[in-house]
Image (cartoon, rainbow, N blue to C red; front, side):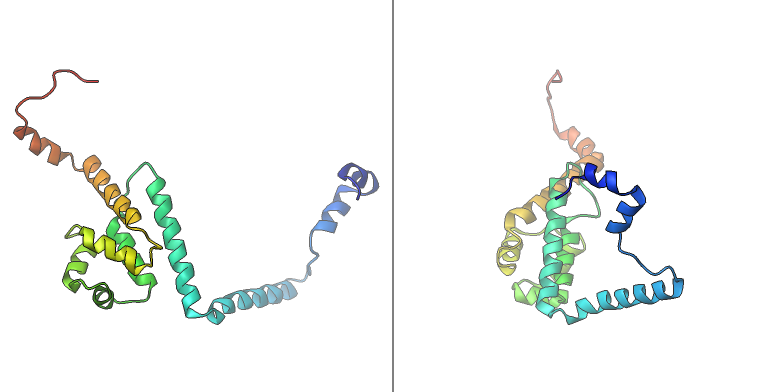
Length: 175
């Protein structure tokens, strides 16, 4: 096998580049026809994929999104517990009412959690772990919930100001 230095001695940079680049048609019509055939083939692949494999790939993608968000130091209003719960249900191709029946909770309770009107109960979180066959552990859902609380603490200072009236004595120094 020749080293790159030996190849450089024998061939010009253009010849080296041409040997690594697949030659294509210079004719724009032929090139477009080839590209459209490739696009058509790529778009047909997902339709040939079985439904359960599509769901698996969507759920795996969601899990990676959740893990990445949990690792971030900052909390985000859009990436809340309710957002990820709604995504989980959507990626399963289920209606909220159907999903609520599967995990034995009241559909209105699930709706309130999804719409940020109510905090999820521990029971809901444990049922999410069980429903996902432990692919989405309860600990992951709890960490998302803690991220929501971090966001509230950072962006809703009025709560702290309101509660400061209830503290009769506080430290006289700062660390």
